[in-house]
Length: 252
Ligand code: NAI
Image (cartoon, rainbow, N blue to C red; front, side, top):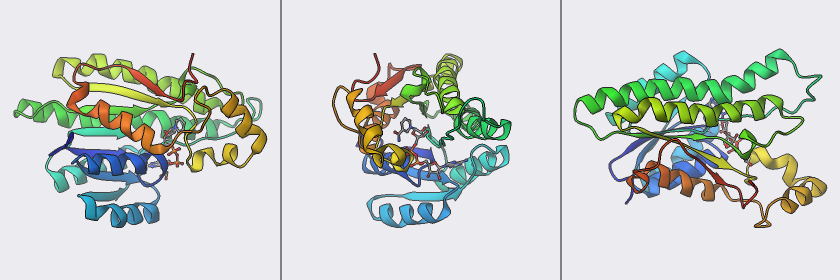
C-alpha cells in the first residue's frame, strides 16, 4: 500500500472531496485525523470508515490558530507523528462585487487561505523537528481550484483565496525543499459535492459547465482523492511546488 505506516490530517474531511480523500488514504494504508467543524458528519465518517483502518475526528475551525494548535497536538497524541497534511477545508460565498461585505470577504479568505498557512506552518514545524530525529520528510497537499486562475464574477473572495492557495503552495514548496518536505496543490474543476449543488440543481448552469468541460461530465470526489494520494505518496517523490488540475480538461 502506497501510504502504509503514514499518518495524515485532512481538513474539511467530513464531507465531499475531503471525505473521499480520507477514504482513499485509509485504503492506501494511512491513519487519518479528520478536522472539521461539522461534528455530526465527522462522527458518521469515523463510524463508516473505521472498519477499513484507523480514522479519528477532531472538531476544529481551521481558520482559528488555537483550534489548529489543538488539532496538531491531538493528532500527535493519537498517532505519534504527522507525515501528511491535506489543506482541503473550503467555503464559497456568492455576492456581486458591489455588494460584498468586508466580513464575508474575510471569512472566505480565512477559511480557504489563512487555514492553509496556519495548518501548513504548524504541521511543517512538527515535520522539521521529526526529520531532525530521523523521520522521513513528509508531504503537504493544498486544495486549490481552476478558479485560482479563472475568475468567477460573483465569487470574489473564493477566486482570490484560491489564487492565494496556489501561490502559497509555490512559496511553501520553495521554503520547505531544504528539509525534503514536498508541497503541491490539486486544482479541481467541477466536482459533484454539496458545494456544487447550485450547479447540479440548475439545468441551464449545468449545461453551461458541461459545455466548457472537454470530458463532458462533472467529476467525482474520488478522482480528486486519487491525485491527492499520488502527490502524498513516494511515487511523487520528485514533484513539488505544482498545482495539478483535475478538471476534465477545463483549464487551457
Ligand atoms: P464541501 O462543502 O462538500 O465540504 C467542505 C468541508 O469543509 C465540509 O465538511 C465543511 O464542514 C468543512 N469546513 C468548512 N469550513 C471549515 C472550517 N472553518 N474548518 C474546518 N472545516 C471546515 O466542499 P467540497 O466540494 O468537498 O470542497 C472541498 C475543497 O475542494 C474546497 O477547498 C473547495 O474549494 C475545493 N474545490 C471544490 C470544487 C467542487 O466543484 N466541489 C471545485 C474546486 C475546488
